[in-house]
Image 1 (cartoon, rainbow, N blue to C red):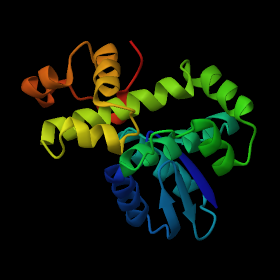
Image 2: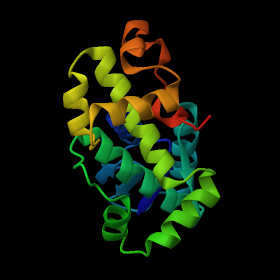
Image 3: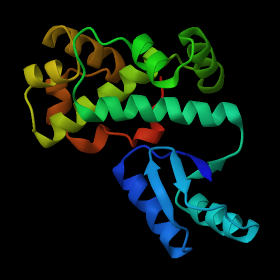
Length: 189
């Protein structure tokens, strides 16, 4: 049995969902961002209990096919950004078409219709949050960040960062973590 879960955006989310499944003695085959594969079908009572527990944590079990597809798309893009391994000429079109075995125009149209932003905007917002994370924790310098997130230059990263946040990366770094948002709250202004 496969469950699609909205708002799973990081490894802590996977851990939280996993703990709730264990509390209900629901055995899993695997847990990914936005998706849980259970060993066997749940009872109505178990599903209701799981739904209630997950809702308290800010998650939602999806039953709409479009929403399920959107969560899969988000999970793929978030995982790609979190990997910090984006080549300079990375193509969202090729990446998603290959991963989902669907026409990109369909994927793009569906995402924009449901989320109200384009896939590209979502991807840029995720990359911006990753830049913030690395800046706040001082893990990498701007040149290294630029390379890991597939920017053509530090200037391109800085320009895009300022367009999204209103701050230069160096100014943001001085202000600290108060400007970071949880991944599930990232939206276009």
